[in-house]
Amino acid sequence: MANHRLVTLVWIFTEKFGLIFLSMITFIAYARLMSPAELGVGTVIIAIVEVFGILYSSMLEDPLVRLERLEDKHIGTAFWFAVLVSVASIVVITFAAMLYTTSTMLRWMIAAASVKILFTMMARVYVVEMRRTSNFKMLASRTLLGKVAGGLGGIVVALWGFGAWAVVAQALIMEFVSIVVLMRGNRRRIAFYIDGPFLRELLTAGAPVAINVMSWQTLQRGVIVVLGITAGTHAVGMFNMAMRIIDLPRTAIYNGLMSYALPVFARRSTDMARLIAMISDSTAISGFLLTPLFLGIALTAEDIILLIFGAKWAEAIPLLQVLACTTAIGNTAMYATTALVAVNRTHLTVKAEVATTVLALALVYSLGHLYAGMAAALALLVRMVIITPLQIRGLNTAIGYGWRSFIESNYRSVIASLIMAAAVVFVSAHLGLRGYLHLAGSIGIGTLTYALAYSALHPRWPQEFKSVFTTR
Image (cartoon, rainbow, N blue to C red):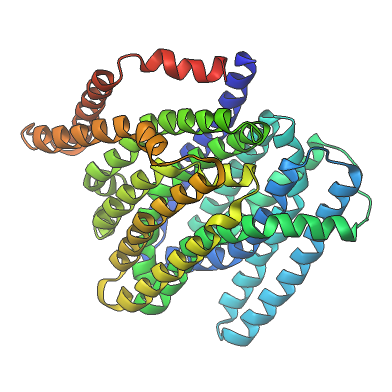
């Protein structure tokens, strides 16, 4: 059992860290080949399209993963509903672009980008089956192949001088290659069949999940859209630069952990004591790795931006610092939504998710014209500070995971990370190093300080972390 868990996690993180590496290469190329405004246009278009794909995906995928038995009629119903709703969305988006956009180029880009919804939704039933059977090797293969093909295609389009088309091309190629790989790996005929009662049951179970997910995703993409309206594409480009640096590791790591955590939590959903122990252990291990990682990004933001991307992106430095700290706070309750999905209690945080999202978007709209990208960064920080305690309250109501469990899971990584930050700020200022040597020195000091501080707070952490994979 322990070996199986470790192999599963190895494949999950082979995929996710491979994505980080490939995405970083692609993004560096875009930063060199495109202007902030061009990157901003492509980002806004993909953000609008992805809202639809994420809404439909979240409504279908997690409820299907939770089912005790997944039958052919369930697969057929989900697949063909996904196809039909995707085609309808493509028509609506294309028609809306023709009505509200005067630029022919923008119309074509939006229409082409909307096809991504169809590819994304066709893949959902295949992804569900592989998550249920822990076939993360196939999931990793399709994602990495798609990313390689999409990245190469996007870079070629950028080299040809087509600007924002590069972002659209990358998204389309990546999704198309991914679905082709999945279909070749699982050669099954999906009969055209839609079971009305099951579809209603599926959508009813998926609606609270979709609202929670869409709250976050609407926030991520809505911030970009609202920022573009109030502050222009240059501000969007700067904010997107900072957000991408955070999103590359965060999305890859979070998605990998959640893909593994949901079926594990669901199997323990009838034993609250074991479930709480699993959430606490998972939070402690994740915090051990992720809290210092994102706080470290905040500490080294200036070196990262100037050395890797160039001085033209200097305005993104303070944005990156704020977003990194926001993510570090979010790490403390990162499994809250997944745990609520596992016990089918996601409705407990729906109002809080929606209200804080609306608040954040209102802040961006009100302050965007004055503070540009910083308005968006601060809005996300305010939202995270408010939503985290509300998520813990929801977990406490659902399964009894309260503040004591929350503090016990996080206090060591938080204290050790703050000690690390103090050491880096103090020591790096006196090193007398510049450029990559300064960056390497800061990373070295931070890693050493954090390791010593955490070990002092929790001397037996290697044995306890290992037990998570062998006993529970």
